[in-house]
Length: 225
Length: 225
DNA sequence: CCAAGGATCGACCCCACGGTTGATCCCTGG
DNA sequence: CCAGGGATCAACCGTGGGGTCGATCCTTGG
Picture (tube, rainbow over the protein chains, first blue to last red):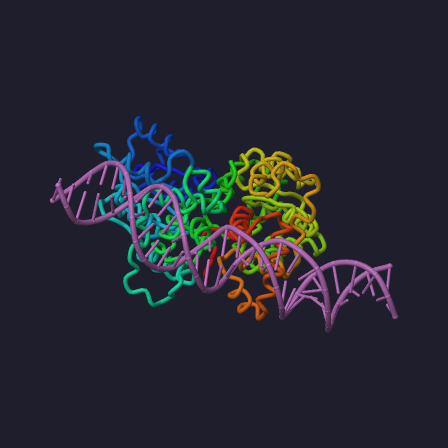
C-alpha cells in the first residue's frame, strides 16, 4: 500500500511542485493538502495520512506548533519538517514537538523521496548533508567564525525572547518594541542582548538576516499587516 | 499553435509547480527551463520561445540583466518577470530592460495564465492588483506613512549604491563593507546614508527587511557563499 | 568647455545600540 | 521553604551608525 502523504505549505505553487514529484512515485500518494496549520489540523481529523510534509513558517499556526498538536494525538502520522534554512532553534523545538525529521526545501527530489520513505518506516531523518551545508552557509554570519567549540545555548530562546526577536526581525527599534509589548526599553534591551549572545550574533541586523534565512519571517509574509 | 513558454528560476520545485500548471493548459507548452540567467541565455540560443517567465533574483545573472540581454536580441521572446515582492526599483529597471510585465509569484494561477496570454499577444501586464497590494503592504515600513505625496527618488539607486545595499542586506557593518569594496568607511557611510534617504528607510535594519521582501536577497540564497 | 551627477573622502555631532552589573518579583520544582 | 530560571527594570559607558556640511575627482552630455 502506498504511503499517504499530506502537504502543508502556504505557497500553492510549491505544493504543486511537491505533488507532482510525489505523484510520479509508485509508492506514494498525495491524499491531502493544507495552506496553514489550522487547516492542516482540520483536514487530519477526517483523512488518514502516513507522512506530513510540513512547512515551518505559515500563517495562523506555524509548523512547529502544528507539529506539536498533530503528534500529541493518538495514532499520529509522521511529520517531516521542511525549511529553507535551519538552526538548532528549530531542530530542537521541532523534534521536541514530535517531528521525525528535517529537510531543506531545496534538497534534490531523490533525497526528499528517500527521507519520506525513511520517516514512514520509523527512522528519524535529519539530513546530514543538510546540517553540514547549513553550518557552512551560516558561519560567515557568526562572530567567532570557526573557533566555536561549544556554541553554548544556541537557539534555546525563551518564548518572550522569541517574541522580541520577531519584532526585531521586522525592523523595529528597541523603543518601538517596548511600546508594542508595553515594556520598559531597558527590558527590551535585556532581551535583545540575550538573543544576540544566545544566537551568537553581533547585532540586530544579523538577527533580521537570520530570521529570514530561518524562515521565522518570510519574504512577502508581512513586515506590515 | 501553442504558446512556447520558458521557465527561468533557480528553485527547481517552483519551476516544477509552474510547469505543471502550464502543462494543464491546451494552449501552452513549457519548451525550456533554466536555473540562472547565464543558462537561460544559452538555452535561448538554440530554442524558440514565445514567453519567458523570469525570476528576478537568481545566481550569476539576475532577472533584470538577463531580461536586458534577451530583449536586446532580434526576434526576442516576451519576458514576464516574476517576483515575491515589487518596487519602483524593479518595475522601472525591469521594464526599461524590456520586460513586458510584472507578476507576483503568489498570484492565483488563473491570473498568471491570463498574464502569459496577454504578454504573448503583445500587451504589457503590470498587474494592477499587484501594485496596489504591494504599496499597501509596504507602507508601514516607510517613515512618513500615509503622508508621502511625492515619494521622491524611491528606488532610483545608483549601481554602486545597490552594490552597497546588497552587502548591508547581508548583515555586514560599514567597516566590513569598506574592506570588501576596498573603500573608506566614510564613503560607505555616505552610500548607506543616501540609500536610506532614497528608500525612505530609517536604518540598515530596515534595509535588510526591504531586501528580503523585495527579493533582492532571498532566504536560502546565500548570506554566505 | 562647462554643468550635472556619481564616487570618493573627511570632520563633526548625536543617539540608538550593545555590554556589564545588579536589583526586584514571580513562579515552579525539589 | 528555598534554589533556580524567567521577566522586569536601572545606571553606566563605549562605539557604531546616521545626519549634515563640505571637498575633490571623474565621466557624461549638451
